[in-house]
Length: 254
Ligand SMILES: C[S@@+](CC[C@H](N)C(=O)[O-])C[C@H]1O[C@@H](n2cnc3c(N)ncnc32)[C@H](O)[C@@H]1O
Image (cartoon, rainbow, N blue to C red; front, top):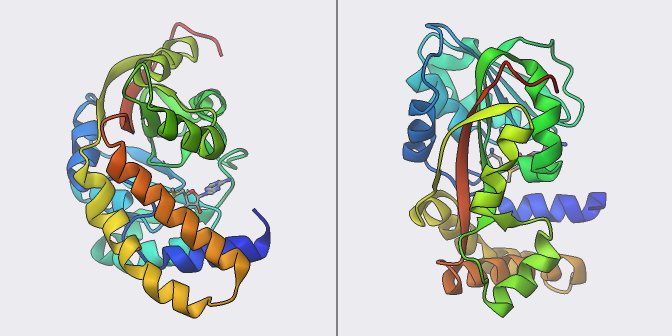
């Protein structure tokens, strides 16, 4: 995405509570699968965005030290602003998930909601594993097909938007090969797409259309956003965000 396109995209997204599907209940459900964490775990939230899940983790793990990384500094500022009393336990860092400048074996828990697709889940699993302490836990969400035979229109949409998209079980099968022991996975409820993401995003679009009247690039981005939301409304049963939780296994030398 070129710089102007990115600026318009970020403007259209505005200051939504989340930059993708998710909700606190799902974050906590995934956390409950990460058993055996120490009293004061070191947590890394990758592609944290404005930090809704970072705050949920901070609340659930009152003695945790959390590092939250993203390439977009204004999101980190928003996370800091909403952290209140937890601000001193949350360290924010502008960093690229493909080359995280962090010490090996320094985290008990790696978290990534709605962002692993950026580098691709296969690459993410391998690149991030060395950051985990022995027996540490990884939790991430990934967009997946929930049906063996996706409807033609949905398949055509995601062939453009996310050609690497796979079935939920095919993604689950990646973890063992990459050196993790799966702890479980579950599909985010449909409400997690709407309450803090698509509903407030859709409400912004008329204003964005007026603001960018006559701007072809901006109108194309707004139109694509409308299309993405319409696809979700129509094909809700065919795809979803899957939360995967796995533990670093000791047996595999990757
Ligand atoms: C779909 S948003 C998800 C944000 C947040 N986890 C949430 O669920 O609200 C993806 C995030 O990844 C960040 N991002 C994009 N490329 C990145 C990269 N190479 N390294 C780290 N973060 C990146 C974006 O700035 C954005 O905040």
